[in-house]
Image 1 (cartoon, rainbow, N blue to C red):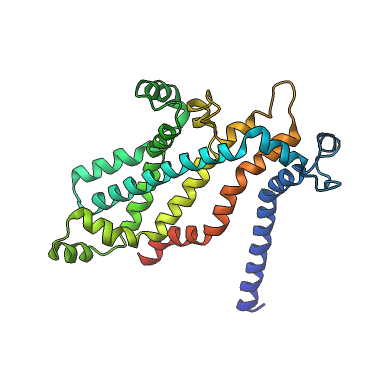
Image 2: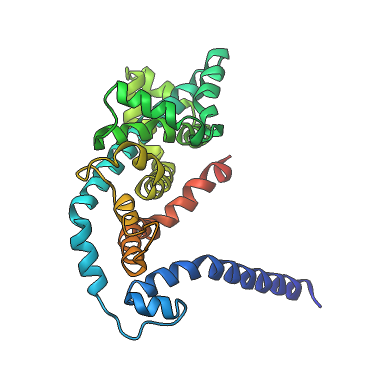
Length: 279
C-alpha cells in the first residue's frame, strides 16, 4: 500500500470515528426535539419512536404557560450585561498585563485567572449572602454583573494569550502620535481582537444563556426575573413530570443559543487557533 493510500485510509477512519462520536452527542438532542411534538401518552409508550404527527399544541401551551417572550427578554438582558462586561474588562486587563511586564503584572495575572480552578459549589452560599448584602441578588442586572466575576478569569486567559501576537510597535507608533493608553486600546488594539472576541462571546453566550445554578440561587424567587431554564424546570416535579411540556420548554430554551453557535462557529475555530497560527 502506498503512502498516499495509507493517508487516505487514516483520514477515512478518522472521519468515520468523528461521525460516530458526533452521532452519540447529537442523538439525545434529536430525541428531545422529536419528543417535543408528542403528547404525554406517546412519550410514555415509546420515547424512541417517531411522533405520529407534528402536533404543535405542546408549544402553544408552553409559550403561554411560561410567558415565553417576557422570559426571553430576561435572558437577553442578563446575557448582554454579562457578555459586555466580560469582553470589555477582560480584554483591557489582558492588554495591560501583556504590555506591562513585571512582578506585579505576573501576580495580578495569577490572581485574575486562578478563580478558574475554584468550583462554584464551594462559594455559592457565601456568594448568595454577599449579594444580598450589596443588593445584587434578585435582579436581572445584578445577575448579569455577577457573571463578570465568573467569566472574566477564562476570558482574560484567552485574550492574554492572543495579545502576544499583536506587535508592540503599534503601541509605540500610537504613543508617538500622542494617543493615550486607553485610546490605543480602543482604537487600535480592540479592533484587532475581533476573532478572539467573537470566540469569547459565543462561548459565554452558550454558558450564560443555559446556566441553571446561579439563576436558581439569585432570581428564582421572583417570576419577573426568572430565566428560561428556571421556567422549564417548573414542568419537572418530584411526584409527576409532564415530559411533553418539559421537553418542549427545553427546546424553546436552548434553540436561541444553538442558532448563535451555528451562525458563529467558524469564528470560534478562528479565534482558538489564531494565536497558534500567528505565533
